[in-house]
Amino acid sequence: MSEPDTLTVTAAALAIGDELLSGRTKDKNIGHLAEMLTAAGIALEEVRIVPDDQQRIVEALDALRTRYDYVFTSGGIGPTHDDITADAVAAAFGVPCDHDSDALALLGAHYAERGLEFTPARQRMARMPLGSRHIDNPVSRAPGFIIGNVHVMAGVPSVFQAMLDNVLPTLKTGTKLLSEKVSCPFGEGDIGDPLSLIAKAHPDVNIGSYPRFSGAGFSTEIVIRGRERDLIEAARRDIEAMLASVAQKLGTAAV
Amino acid sequence: MSEPDTLTVTAAALAIGDELLSGRTKDKNIGHLAEMLTAAGIALEEVRIVPDDQQRIVEALDALRTRYDYVFTSGGIGPTHDDITADAVAAAFGVPCDHDSDALALLGAHYAERGLEFTPARQRMARMPLGSRHIDNPVSRAPGFIIGNVHVMAGVPSVFQAMLDNVLPTLKTGTKLLSEKVSCPFGEGDIGDPLSLIAKAHPDVNIGSYPRFSGAGFSTEIVIRGRERDLIEAARRDIEAMLASVAQKLGTAAV
Image (cartoon, rainbow over all chains, first blue to last red; front, side, top):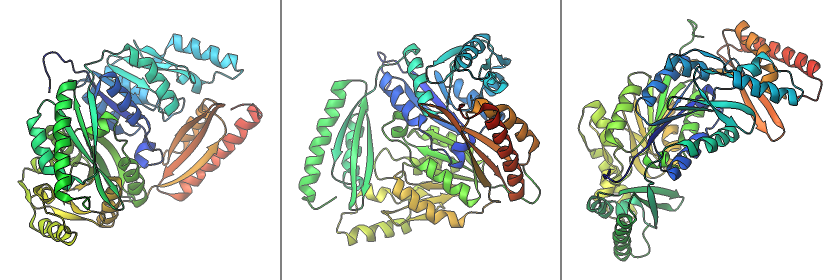
């Protein structure tokens, strides 16, 4: 699928937190990130979730940051003892993790304005790997940070989303993946064989088939993805002709 | 945290599918699996999401199955050309992937009963690595399978959940992790320092701190996890005393 005139930019996500692995918290950031990156023309190619454990974070981060153009992390940058992401990222990059003077100034002013004590815990949120750039946090001020190709963001979804909005315009993006959906009232079992032939006949697009189950039976959503509109349209025409022929064969009773 | 009289059983999840990485589908299986495993006394320690790509699936599977007691996969075992999980799992184990005669019989009878043609696509759902055992699928019949320590299940949440219900009673389980929640009306910035001291004073429990953001500000949920009830209670008493002291210090205005 890679043609000389298309550019692929890749990314991975690393969600950090014991609470995601215990089931206490259901992750909401991965799906949002996936949607936003896809819309921007960046291909999310891998996701990992690891616990609040420095060695596990470093290991995952090193595997991902060497393989993909960008890595986006979520979680573990708050003020409490179990927030160890900044230290882990610094360890992965082999640089010290310390209070960043700009972040201290920003947060100091923020808490002074609100008449709140700038506790050591709150100061902890100004810690980041040496050489990081800030990611602005319009929601609750404490910045995320960027080091190398790694973007470190908060786990709280509203903060994660606000940080991502700030980061996205700064990223290089690839050729956008276009997609088209075809709804199919038949189950995959009825269309799998002819759809497989169509997929083979259209090697420059990716044809995905997604079953939906209702109590009554399966239906299917077919998604055609590619970087050229006319190739997608050609596949769509073949799929629609195929569905008409399956409908004729099965009558209206089949699902 | 590992004491001589406790047993830890570990697991990883591998969710497979382009649609999860494009954002088209929001995963619902990981959170459910996490909750069910935790309740059963099995520690979910890592999650990965990879595309429908044999090499990526094999790589992730090999990394996870050698490291954890159990691996649970979701997705890619349907009847269409983009369902390649069975082949990838077989490749990881170095065994052939072929139609399983019991699964063919089961599915053949199922479609005959419903008056539906047993198409090659539907027969495809009977393919599994040589030597696999079935995971019963009461929802739509096509079985999942177990090979080695890897449990291969469907991506459709209702089918995944039904398969997991069948698998859970067959697993060895560890000492159950107990947990207790303490709701805290203050943000992490106000409790981070004393909570860190409490965490150090109670090394045999794990104290997690989870911020919640409403428009008005942050509050915190504190979760104490451990394998002995009295150690959890001791930490809880210290946390409640700390919260009372923070409340006194801040008055009622602070959040």
